[in-house]
Image 1 (tube, one colour):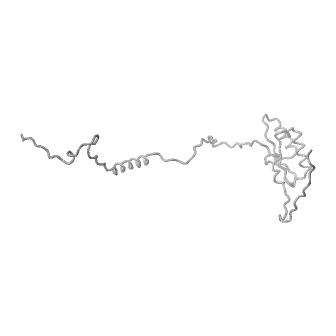
Image 2 (cartoon, rainbow, N blue to C red; image 1 turned 90 degrees about the horizontal axis):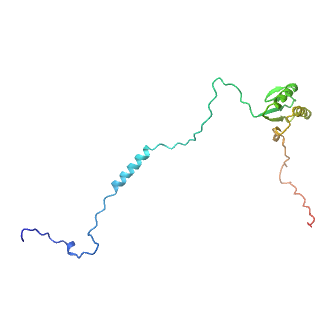
Image 3 (cartoon, rainbow, N blue to C red; image 1 turned 45 degrees about the horizontal axis):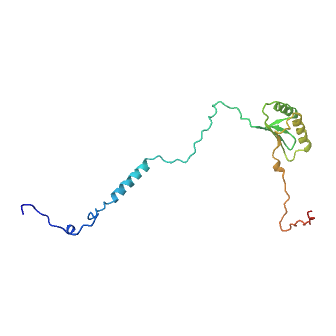
Length: 177
């Protein structure tokens, strides 16, 4: 036929074409190489990311110079009375005249420190009263004065066993009205 080669009709061409039918679907590409590439990319990004640290950054004050030997003073002054009656001002032994002078100097401070009185359990009561008189004479028995360590002297009576406890008697009350 005039030198034109005709192709052999195939099965597909012989079938009647339905509307919107474009023939056989295209084959799916293999997804394994893509998944391996994404996994390698994620692993490389994780390896290059900075490590999470487990610490809290706190800016501390600058250290004192090497020759700095001054003692930091507490915000309170403590008078300790030993069992034999000897008084100590901030752990320094003092007699009554020195304590009176120190208390007078302390009363003249512009900012009043708390004054803690800590008597020993065996200290004679008249000796504690003498110290209290010195404190009152200096005018330091105000809101900044307090006793310290009183919880050491709390003693509670406890029964040997709780089997012999007697319940309190009930009392009838008069009706209200």
